[in-house]
Image (tube, rainbow, N blue to C red):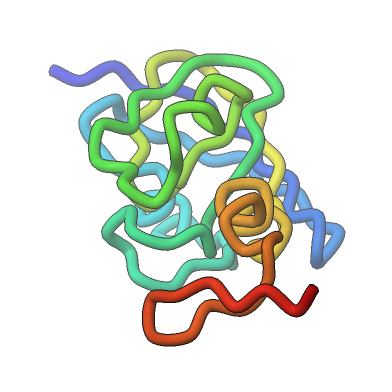
Length: 122
């Protein structure tokens, strides 16, 4: 039988808080939605950053989070759509564009790419 954990979610963009109960064998996002939480999402399969959160306390497991680099995971970011709780948690939603920039901004900082060739305006 799966253990159940208390998950406190601060939805920064809406200024709301949710506390939900999530079994360790269930995805946090889907279970939270089933309990009335209105949270951001897009792909629901760990490939984007729409449901990204910052873990403030607690532990989770996210083996399918393709949309987050190992560096961002180590910094405490997670994707709720493919995360399983491993303890009571407190998380805070993030702005998708901010997370995307943290992850990919360094690749696009050198200018526009056209047909696979970097265009240097200098």
